[in-house]
Length: 282
Ligand code: C2E
Ligand code: MG
Ligand code: MG
Ligand code: MG
Image 1 (tube, rainbow, N blue to C red):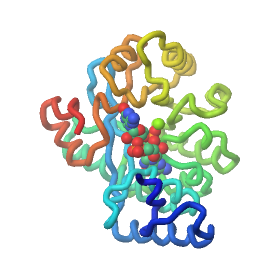
Image 2: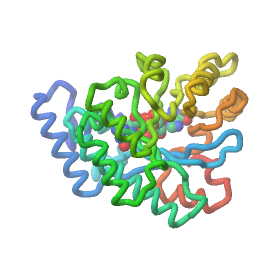
Image 3: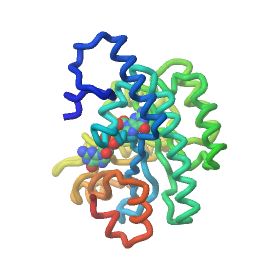
Image 4: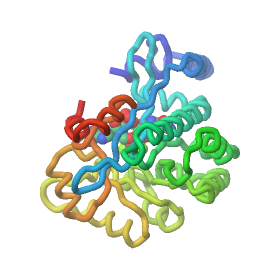
């Protein structure tokens, strides 16, 4: 498994067997090389409208096309990128590539193109005093409409200090939307919602409804409505869950039941071909 192979580096190592300084230098060098060699790729997972499953947007999810280890998921290298600070240049690349792709899809597909582009950001990125300025530069460079961009942060990021709050405020002032990812798994959910101005919450997939009563999924939707915030259900894997969420009143959902994260080519094909390819996960 990925964890045993170690994070972000070329050689196998056991956690704890390497001095922290050496580990940091190895991860920094490996991720710097990955960026220089253009080895990172974005896959995109559709966000759909319930109940019919029409595509309304996508979430960008980073992968590393590693020359020796194959396609690595974010769990294999994002933690190391966060520890070393490499998440800042990596995150900038992700944002630029996602915006470039969104604008390219609009040129190619017109009204059929995904309306919104969601990009995940780590706490470390929002702590940078220049984060909002960097986002503004990427928007200007790519021609991306800020209102089509959603930055996803976790609850623990949202409770960050002064620089984080300033980044969040500046993003919203630019018209960029904010989403609280993995909603319900953090420690300060409700007080956070009252104090942090977000546009969307993403109900964590651990709360996707199971047969029987769906107290949490239903209650979270009521809270979101009361706060005037959009709710998206993540990690929807079955038609029963999709139907239940629709019955509860959810109008946005994401999950393997609708579509897996896909390459840009697969997204474009799914949009221009019959609905079949969006519904059938690859
Ligand atoms: P996330 O933002 O909550 O993204 C959703 C994750 O759940 C994705 O995993 C997606 O493939 C997976 N998923 C989607 N639908 C389902 C489902 O129905 N069932 C199950 N079991 N899983 C589903 P992925 O791509 O491995 O990403 C994991 C996490 O890595 C993301 O969680 C996000 O926190 C982080 N991440 C991904 N890309 C980036 C990035 O560019 N920057 C940063 N800072 N973090 C990223
Ligand atoms: Mg996310
Ligand atoms: Mg999530
Ligand atoms: Mg999640």
